[in-house]
Image 1 (cartoon, one colour):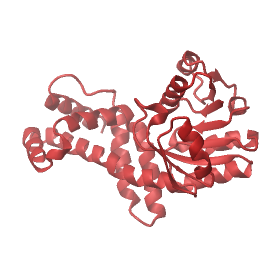
Image 2: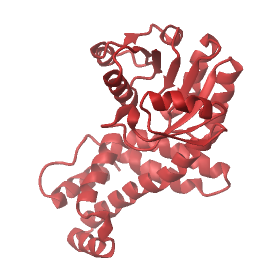
Image 3: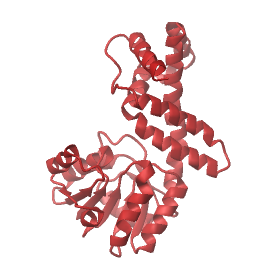
Image 4: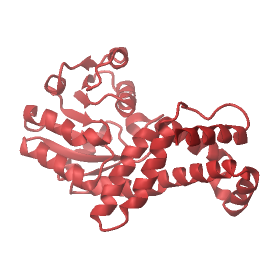
Amino acid sequence: MKIAFIGFGEAARAFTDSLQAADGSREFAAYDILETDEMSRAMAARGVRQGADPADAVAGAEWIVSAVTADQSLEAARSVAPHLSRGQVLVDINSVSPDRKRATAHEVEAAGGLYLDMAVMAPVHPRGHATPVLLAGTEAAALAPRLAEAGFALEVAGDAPGEATAIKMVRSLFVKGLEAITVEAMLAASASGCFDRVLASLSKSFPGLGWPDNVSYNLERTLRHGKRRAAEMRESAATLDALGLRGGLAAEIAAVQDEMGALPLADVPEGELEQAVAEIAKLRVAKG
């Protein structure tokens, strides 16, 4: 089996690692618009053939996995559509709105390819391609057994593109929103000099959230992945707007995630949590 990736970031690398571990006979190719030395090393270290362009990467592949940034998902499909052979499957794992997935499906199917809307429902580490996913699309039920045999932990959500990602976009409003509101509340508590009292009050009112560990966890997630989460939240906003609901909430969550991801930190600074939060609050205020 030959598998090609368009985009070779965290998700594509995690999928490659676990797919290779499960079956060493698979062949891999990839193309990423970021043709950096680090990208080339990441592919070479995994024995992944680096395509000269999207057409070269997908040539002869049975499965093509689109794993790009949210704003590039439709362009990524358009870059490979003219080069698809009948029966090739494009698996769209990007965290984008249902409308975007439907538009992408149209491009792929018009070119003679098969399209699969795949929503990845948990962090890709440590399980890689065995991370729980939802599938949707006209071929979802037919393709599901092959994916399950390959080790995907899947559930078919529907037979129309967009049905899987709709579940993720709505769920993400809560998950990424909880991260954002935790971060903003604790930064505000620190800046106003009442960190201990706010933390104690929240711990008493919502013990199930696991205070104070969840503060450290949410800070780390937004610092490390804020840029990507912000892009996902903008797609969530588009999803809600299309439903006639308040996409502005998701847009504000995106702004918080974006601001955290832009800070010169990838982890919560060492030391007491209160001190770490105070440092992050100062950086946020300084960034203005």
